[in-house]
Amino acid sequence: MSDELQPWALETLAIRAGHTRTPEGEHAEAIFPTSSFVFGSAAEAAARFAGDESGNIYSRMTNPTVRYFEERLAAMEGGECCVATSSGMSAILAIMLGLLKSGDHVVCSSSVFGTTTVLLQNYIEKFGVTVSFVKLSDLAAWEQAMRPNTRLCFAETPSNPLTELVNIQDLATLAHRHDSLLVIDNCFCTPVLQRPLALGADMVMHSATKYLDGQGRAMGGAVVGDQALVGKTIHGVLRSAGMCMSPFNAWIFLKGLETLSIRMQAHCSQAMQLARWLQTQPEVEEVYFPGLATHPQHKLAQTQQSGFGGIVSFVVRGGRAAAWRVIDHTQLLSITANLGDTRSTITHPASTTHSRLTPEQREAAGIEEGLLRVSVGLENMQDIQHDLQRGIKKGC
Image (tube, rainbow, N blue to C red):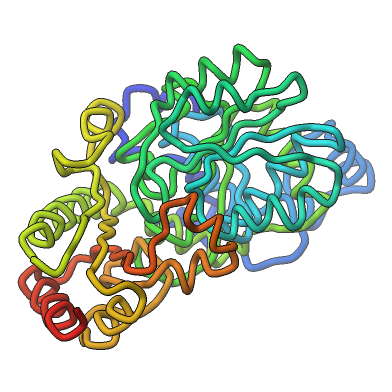
């Protein structure tokens, strides 16, 4: 981020950072739907391909619209640079491919998104990388899992779907003491609510598909960090492997970032209201939301985050059958595994987002059969409550 942007607040960065106007003088960012770019001479082409001269080459690794998004998100996260990818999972894959080699070891929280676990165990381990899973909030478990060949610690905080937290600053200190890097999945909070790099993390990754977009329109991911690790290493993976973000999707995310701050404030407010209401329902056994005083890391959330997020998970009596009946009796909430949308969504993690895990893995991650996850949208709260109450009363 340039010096001239330093005084700007996050809300301003979300609207103004990263855009360099073309000679056309456009007010909104332009979309560059082109696969390649023309060079002024053979010498200029050679210089750009060699890295001796900056400039556009090929949209797999350089595109102005994608660059606008990258620069804006980097500014918001407080990082030196950002690499945009085709999805959140491709962002994680780029991190693993760029930082790890055969013989390395990874420590990952057991409460990460189910597909992240599958990626690590079914694919990354095929190439001679070993992975240990630990309870996210248990720093002693992280310490015990560290080995001389541990190169990477990966954590999702708050976690999906139980909104468990870890002290990022303490985990960063622990990782660095063992010469390991710390990567934080900041999908649930976004830079509006949490700044992992400022707390000591080495990299932050996002599924831009979620809150950064905010309306469920496009797929994308991002990695933010310093120039050496992200600007060279992760970008090098992107350049060769090709998991690039499309210019049109980048433009959508740019528009999403402009309203991110105000949307996250609204999501937080809505989720708090829903969580408190769910606590009053006799059919609900437990509610998971960092804003509740009953949440195990409530005090940490108050200090580490500027808001509690928009995800509320809860357990209904009666296991999977009751949970499915709750879902099937709702009429307003969208039955989908996506989250971070203006539309409220509901899903049963054990049979969807975490279905590819073994029963033992789900148990270790706390994914009960009666667990439901709601991504609280921006509809009227009484309508959301009424819709869930219909499902809860008929389902349990």
